[in-house]
Image 1 (cartoon, one colour):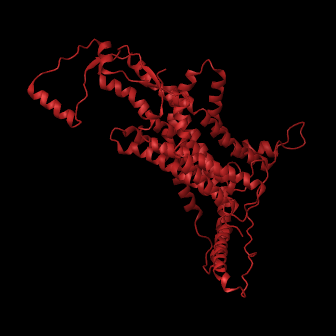
Image 2 (cartoon, rainbow, N blue to C red):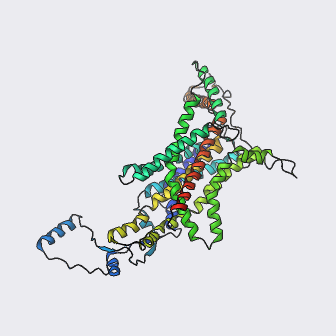
Image 3 (cartoon, one colour):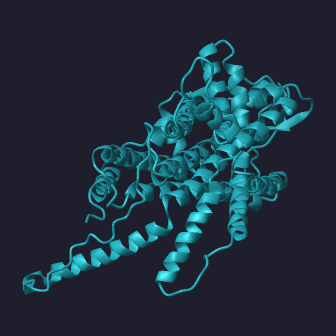
Amino acid sequence: MALLGAQLVITLIVISIIQKIGPHFSIAKWFLCSTGLMRYLYPTNNELKQLAGVPKEKPKHNKHNKGSAKYNEQNGNREPETFHVPRNIDIQLETAKVTQLDVIHLRFYSEYQWLVDFTLYAAIVYVITELYQIWFSLQDEINLSIMWCMLVLGFSMKILFSLTIQYFKSEESIGERSTCIVTGFAYLLISMIVLIVDENHLEIGLEKAYSSFNENAAIFLNNQGLNSSGPASKIVLKAFLALWCGIIGALFTFPGLRMAKMHWDSLRYCQDNKLLKLLLNISFSLPFILVIMWIKPLSRDYLTSRIFSGMTAPIMTESTFESMRIALVVIAVVLRFLLMPIYLQAYLNMAYHRIEQQKKEAGRTTNIEIQKKIAAVFYYLCVVTLQYVAPLIICLYFTFIYKTLGGYSWVGGYLNNDECSINDQRPISPTASSSTLEEASVIKSAQEFHLALDSLKSVFTTDVFRGVFGFATWWTCFVWFASTSLGMIYQSYFSHS
């Protein structure tokens, strides 16, 4: 009975592709350097002096100053030249195309490249596995594509955590730190409310998952000689789920606010392009539709139970509805990825708007402040890109796991993967020759491993996976929509434009 079979072959092939092609081609690098992104260049000191009418300083020939300057230059301690200019100085920023040499030095670039590239390779493994499953059954094999999906989720959450923890390390980020804490507790409260809602209204499937897990785990423990009515309390499990929901909400807060700002700016730039404006609005509203798809009276009852006038049957079957719900998540994520260059260019244009806003202010500022204000936008490009793509990746790969472990299909119908045949192993003949004893030992070890795996399958059934990963998929979509909506509300009330 095959444990890995074609899964191991697919994994090894993709790992080989990563080793051979990875150093030469990167989809992450392509998104930043080959999609026409333009960055703004900050003005040099000479340009600012010329615009502000600042006279050039004459070099001092003092012996002490000369020696000090020479020491600073040799030790890399040369202080940048600082002078004051009016805030309303008429600066015309030049643009340059984003190139590979520009982005490799940016902060979090290596993390961004690794995450996006590995996500692509994991998607290739998943797609090949799904195509393989169409012609061949994976009932007796370990689906290694799930392992790839789990790794992608782990990397994405780790990076989001690393980005969020930066707000707690800086002494100047008191507001951001407070925002993360407040939103985390707010989402914790919302998740507690959601977890006690009747599942006839919000079909997260946790009640059925808990019943299946508790009953099968009790049977498993009894078979091992341990008396138990169940391994865990429902309240404890829901408390941990609520805590996880609060953490996810805190991690999604600033990515959502950033996404809302980019969406707000993108709509301003495409006033004349009606098609692009329509796509942007569809992309923004799709997460709201996804949230509704799990509210039973608003989605499933209308599409699978109600028969409208002139019809003899509902619009779709239960299995078709499940497939449509999964496909909508994939469509929403893919559309966001396709629109990513539009959003990133809207972010890079912040440098221009910062200078235009400064021109309306009175007073004076330094050349260093102006240059930092412009350079910081491009410096944080990879941070912003990670905040854009990481929530998308988390939503997408939770959906992949939900589809596969939940036994759903892309075209309707269900895959019966609950049945686990554990008694069909052929016993090893006691008359086997001595030359086959080692092979028989290996086969016996594989059979024992397969028996242990089947025992776990009897505990973690399809109902358990549907409940856990179905709730995870819905919650990430909900937080994705809620955080961007909060950002849009902020922009509508506090935007300068």
